[in-house]
Image 1 (spheres, rainbow, N blue to C red):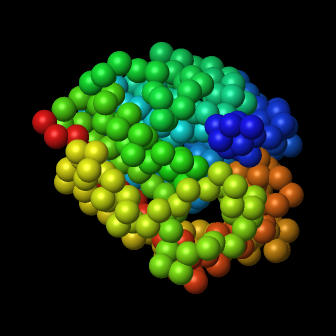
Image 2 (image 1 turned 120 degrees about the vertical axis):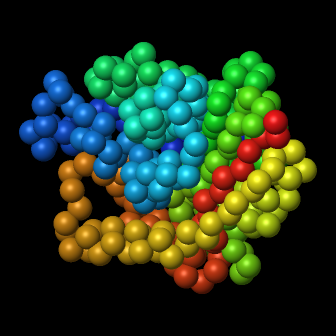
Length: 276
């Protein structure tokens, strides 16, 4: 089985779109008139959800009408949020076919097909021409990327000179050997964590400049602990990323929080740019 297949199978379990529609039905939420805000609890399928997307977006110099790329776009929530917030156009690409299918169906429900286009593909082999995008970002994708240099080279290739590149990830902490399962891996298979300093080094060697890294560990621990507390109290809402994570969801979150607290992982937010 190829690495791409392992990762895609890990993330895309079952009828993703059907799970979301079922949750909306339990909430008596009509599909007609559905908004980006309605879907936010589930379609920002990464740690801290919409909050993390919004904080990253605060740091991005996006202008109306620009063409932005979401690498590893998942269900398309961030792409639709960015498109709506900045009045720009977003292309999304993801390795998991069931996510791409669900993302396009959700985009259609929101009548955003003219702004957001999502397709199946690999961030290590992007299906776009050179110097095409005004900016690109990847949220909690690189933990599953075996060839980090190639991933960054591809991002740089498709960006216009001077364009930004941003990412959020769980980097490897100084103690290493994270506990499993975690959201991105059941047993360590398909996980390729790097320390923040290693990530910076590869970006620099790839040719990116003005690299700014923010330590986000405390924010992620607080976010995980909040969800864990709600789950322990039986207070999780019908709609949330937990419905996509299966029976191991709570254990994933417990380990993710513990790994940060014990310095086994090191979450960061990073913004840099391609030279002009």
